[in-house]
Length: 589
Image 1 (tube, rainbow, N blue to C red):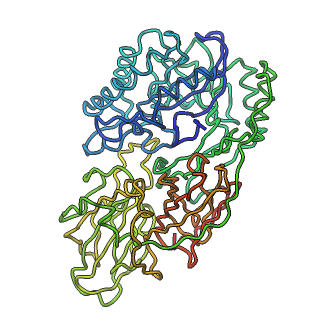
Image 2 (image 1 turned 90 degrees about the horizontal axis):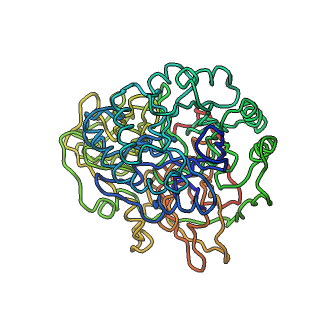
Image 3 (image 1 turned 180 degrees about the vertical axis):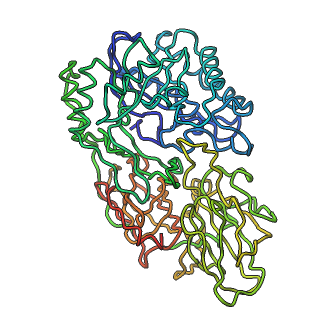
């Protein structure tokens, strides 16, 4: 299914924007994001192949009779890693994102000169199905308030797309947000959820856009989940009631999300709300279509409301896609991460007196290993400490290859250790997703400050950038020779297993009984982060398109803290997204 985020991240939602005042005829439309970082993984290196083929995606929407509201950014938010901005922008450490900083504008211009020529032939004015294009996203919620930046974007979009296309902005329905997020020449819209005061919200839009349609460009049908928080939900009745109220006003509504999907691999972002809050792998969002793309009670409630204002499409509703419970799959430990660094970091370590960030060694996602040695004997427990904001985002500490515990951003910053001079100290740093909304989100990853042992800074580091995905995609570890296993050892380790499908490859959901936290790949495809000890998400969605029929499906798990004594996964025919453990149980996770 093309709308699954991470397989195809463009599909945000769908619903008609069809006011007579807008320059198009009434028709279902699909607002769609284009994440910059999904297409330019390295400076000047572009990827529009396979699942990233934005032109094929847009052509498919045209074949389906959909109109498109395109949201190409350059910043999109969407709880996507760094709001869609490429992490390599931070290789220049003093860059000011989303501003008229010349370094940022140069990168933006290079990207837009690649992307927008692909878009222009598909504009409505040119016979295509793209009816409007959003410029930036909720810029009024960003601290910079840089009108020169917005003017530069407006000029670039006009130069590359022409003068006829409708360009618009989206901001919260507050005067301050609209003051900094809008610009003459860009049609201003607002966003808000059910329960908001419609009169106040649309009055705020009228304050900056005296004429033209009333538009809620992001009507929140649900909400996102954070690791360790409760599963968000919004009642179908509340969403339907808010939609009906807006339609009775003659307003135009775009739903966020209509289908949220999945943050596969490392694509989920994070918020900063007093503390760092990473977003779950599932982006189900309690949306009208579930994570797996199935209709929900909320969808039918929305259809009922829309039927009171315009005819519904003829024909039956598509049913839910079939799911399959493949059952239990036993796994075995393949190797500890520290024993396979030659595979995971083929270029070897970088030597540095003090730790370097992910950005300093040009690592965008995933993991980096920091290695040093104890400088002296530590016979009694002494604190291994990180400075405030020194660990971004989680550091798995091993001494002589024995797991000691985890240092965490806005969490535990000290661990007691003992050992002898020369003992190996390894810290595996995990990037849990860069900030995607609000404050200045130049969100550097790794060890941002030096670790100290009993208040003395450690030095002489070996820093290993880990290319785990590249190894797994090439068949490792299933195609490699077995490794001698240290079965009783906890901490970061790889586990493998296989299973076969009974002649079908249907969607499924995988549960992790007794596991801690980690990453899952099936047939080389990175399905994302699991973290049942934190919750609320307990299962990962596995699209049937990832599975194979007639040959084994290879499972690779990187468990970061400790697998159960008899490790296995459980494949179910339904998800479990709402099971959060209390913070008192987080000590191991």
